Image: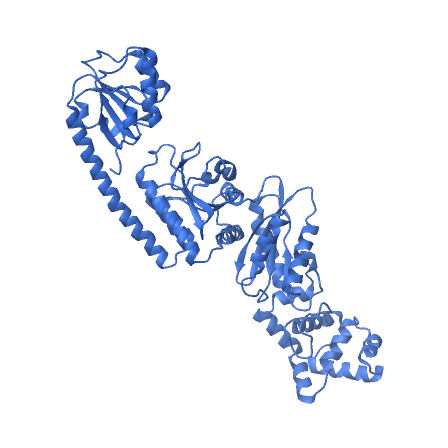
Length: 537
């Protein structure tokens, strides 16, 4: 056993022979017994340090109820594990004043109906305690080696937290200074209720200087530092029906917190951004088992969901980010200053995801426009900000994010200068640009325009430009001829040559539509005779 409790001691044969009966503090038998102390002093508290199981015959106990209450108070104040009174010498039964005082202080009071040899009790219990301490030392060495191994191979923070959860068998949470749950891991299947109302509950548990129990829920809390300053803390949540926190769990959490502190010195410290990225990717691909789990995870990172409009944004920045000043880092630093609640994280190497939480009554456009103008001004005009439809349920974010991704796929070079784009901005050129890697589109362009492009290349002509102007003019030959600077007769002759090469009747509206699509596709593909990316035809 990793440590002895009062209940464990009562089950030992050397104590069981005394027919023990718990007279008070029945719900405190899980207290850890650090040592056994035999005393007949009236004021033994001055010789105690806490955690002792006090054995006495009751011989020195005062008859005065007030003094007897003071005796119990002194034991309770020092934090003894319990009081064991042997009947037969001073008492034939436990005095009611003693029982009442112990109940008021929630101090376990055990009455022995038969006499036992206190020396045998101390020898037995102390031997078990020493064995447990030796086992704890061996266990500590194993845990230290595990976390050292993770540190040396540069493990991610998620691995450290998962290791702590597996070793303790309890949920473990890594949070930052503003009580955002950066990482949450459990020993078994994920428990979504762990993060229920997380920021509010977390604020009720102060941070000790080293691993120790804290707060009304009895959390085990250990500080995590970054270069000598407090960064956050590691929290173990004991199971409600499980045993209390013991020395082994304390040792494990302390080792894990130390390993995380070292990891911040030697690894990539953007743990908050990693957490945001993880949640955004889980929302994008909906990896959550339930809506509740998704809500709790987002809210644990400070994103309000209930009563808010959620607006997904995808920023395609390509290679515009320079050095450590990334688009994601820029947004993560700027948005909190402006008071905007959001999750910001990397969706891929060249894309940043942004999930805004705005009041339902407020307009989202000014916020997104401000973000778009700031990013384009900082990182260049080539950056694309695509906005999905605003939703009111977190479960709807997946579909909206996917739409934002499709918008970002469709917006390419040469698009009209706008701070952000929505679905209504997608026309034929944008649609074809999003399909630019589709072999079927490429084959269609070749079938429709291949002979014309080859003719221009072979003869140095410019029939493709003539066709483009004709299509832009919606079949109006006079306007098209004027745009290309040709006489109507010369322009008509070119159109007849184009009809002969393509085998199409340019007077046919259906044929013109087919060619319009093909020329637009060729232009967005960067083909011969076209611009890199026109806004429209």
